[in-house]
Length: 543
Image (cartoon, rainbow, N blue to C red):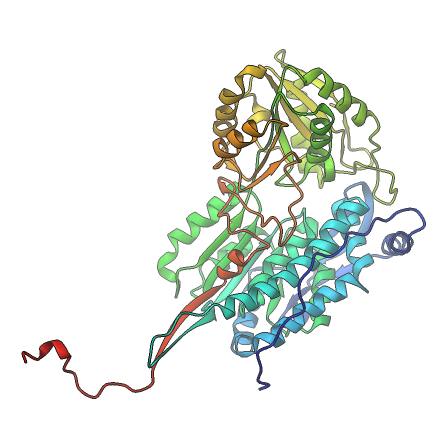
C-alpha cells in the first residue's frame, strides 16, 4: 500500500454555465436533447456489477410531452432487493479496506466526468425525465452533484484528520469505521443531485449501498450509474434497484444487516419508515442510522420596510422555479398591507411575462409538473380556492394536461392565515399570500412560527435591521435554512448546508461534514508505550 499524507485538490463550487445564445454549452445541450428524444432506452437495474433486465417493462414519459416515450425500465421484485443486499455485503470487505485516497479518486473522477463529457447528457436526461429547464438542470444535475462529490471528499479527509490529544507515554487515535451492514438510499424525483448524493455520501465513507430512486427519476439515475461505473466504483458497492417502496421495505427493514437509511421524500413516508425500523429494532445487528430530509411549507416573511421589487422577485423565483417542486420552494408569504399593492402590481406583471411549455424551448420559464397524480392534486387545491369566498386568485388558476401536466403559476390571496394552502405542503407552482397589518409584525412572526409542522426553509425581507434581528431570533426553530433579503431556496453545497427539523427531517445537513459523520462509527484506540508491571498505585503507601 502506498504511504503518505495526501492532500486533495481544494474543493470549489462548480461554475454555473449560462446557456446564453450562441454558447457552446447551449449548442451541445440542444443536440443532446434532440438525440435522446430520437431513441428509446431499455434501462436495467444494476446489481453486483450486472445489468439486470426483467419482463415487466414500465414506460418513461416526458411530463411535458405525455405521449412521448423516452424508454422503459425493468421493474424488480423482492428477490432483486435480496440480490442487491447480497451483492452489497459481498463487496463490503474489499471496499471498506480500500484506502481513503483511492476511494477519493473514484468520486473526484465522477465529478470531473459530470463536469466534462457527461454534462450535456445528464442535464438533458434531467430536463426530459423531470421537466426541468436548462438552467435549473444545470444548477442541479451538473453543478450541485459535482459540488457534493468534491466537497464530500474534502469533508471525508477532514473527518479522518480529526484526532484526539495524547498524554505522555500514550498515543490516542480515532478510527472512523464504516457502518456494520449496508445502507439503503431512497431518493426523490425532483433533484438529480440528491439522487446522486444520497448513495455516494455513504459509499465514499466505506459503506455499501442499495439505492432505490423514484420511478420518475430513473431516466437520469441510469446516467448517474453509468458515470459511477466509469469512475471506478467497484461492482456491488452501489446497487440500483427499480422496485416499489413496499417491495423494498419488506426486505430491507427486516434484514439483520440493515445499518442505515439515507432518505429524501415525503414526511408521511419517512414517519412510516421510522416506525417500521422501531418495530424491527430487535432484528438488527446495530442501531440503524436514520437520516431524512422530508417536506416543507417554506415562508417569506416581509417587513414594512422591504422594497416591493425585492419581494415580488423573491416570490416569483422562490415559488415558481422548477414549478415549485422543491422542498425549499416559497409556499406561504406574509406581506404587510403598506407595500402589498406595489408587490402585487409587479408580481402580476412579472407572471404575465412567464412562458410555459416543453423544456427544449429554452424561452419557457415554466415547464410541467412531474406526473398526473401531482397535477390532479394541485388542480383540486386550485378549484377549492376558486370556490371559497374568503379566497382570491390573484394570478394564474388554470391548468391543462392534454399535452403535458401544465399548472399555471398561481397566487392565492387568503383572508385566513390558517387557510388550507397556508398550512399544507402542495409541492407545485402555487403560493399563498396573507396580508397583515404592518404594525403587527411581531404578532405575525409568532403566526409564522406556529402555522406549519415543517421547519425547512424561510426568509425575512427587510431594510430595517432591528426587524431582521427580531425575525431571525423569533423564527430560529421555524427553518433549518434561513435567508435574509432573498428567496428561501437555492442552497449551495459548502456554503449553505441543507436541512430542517420538526416535520422536515433530521437536519443532518447535506453538503457538510455533519452528514458524512452519520455514515461512520468511530472507534477510539489507546496505545500505551511502556505499560505498568505492578498493580500498586503510590497512594497505597503510608510512608
